[in-house]
Image 1 (cartoon, rainbow, N blue to C red):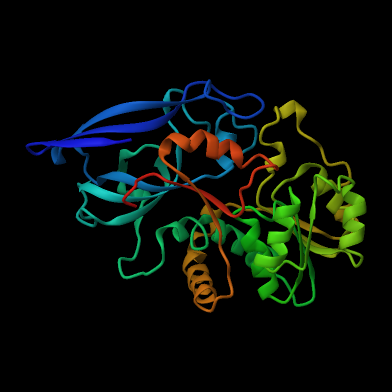
Image 2: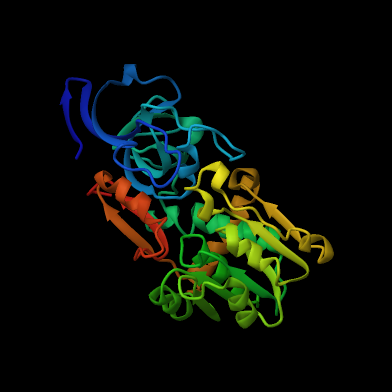
Length: 360
């Protein structure tokens, strides 16, 4: 864990951090690819560049998309590869320890979508924004319901799916950080919602805790066409896609006319080499059914964040939205927590986060 000491106006910090030492061509990253190392930071106010702050990381979001940045090539994905032998980044909530920007003072709590996975780091202030000090929202919720997972689900359902009461909505990876909110938001719009997930326990949780009308275990119901025939006898109007691959292909056999498919991610393909990724053979179904399939990035919709935050906070105050965290403790568990989100046998339900600091 981090340690620090003051030497006059100088602060000396021993900070643990995760570095990408080798690219991952296929499969999950291991300790051969991601290395935990100690970095000694010697920091004074004068050593911090203008419009930068020194951050102590308190909470870290564990998300699938950084896996796409560990391959060493773009192959059509949305962020460039991580440079080798540098600290990887993730969405974090941290505390300002030193500041060279008049807009931020020591003690401010801030969010950073590209925070180094390090206990302490110096970051530019054009990447961060404050957490309202008057808010009574627990900090983990800024990485969950009021953070990227909640916003992503809201964009896919509200902005792209445009649900109408009575429509049939299917959510894959439904027990994940985004899927739990996508289903709940669709239910609040009066839709019938079914999800797929990787265990019977998660099926039960989706129905009992997150209000899904039904759900199925894709490790048991491996004939996806048969499963969708059973759960969607009237067809699918909205498919919130988190997995791609065989599930997307099966969905295209069951879509209704003018169905909408918000494409959030394709986690089933992230650990495959480009040459091994599964193609979709029935895209022609989109023509006959006039289906709209649209990928989206949160960064392209930031002008809607205030609208989302107001709506989601109201739902939370009214008890209409349930959120769940799987918390790992200590930055040393980043690799374990990261690989766990790709495992259907994992016990993770909802958002996976790391409490980095004991005093968070």
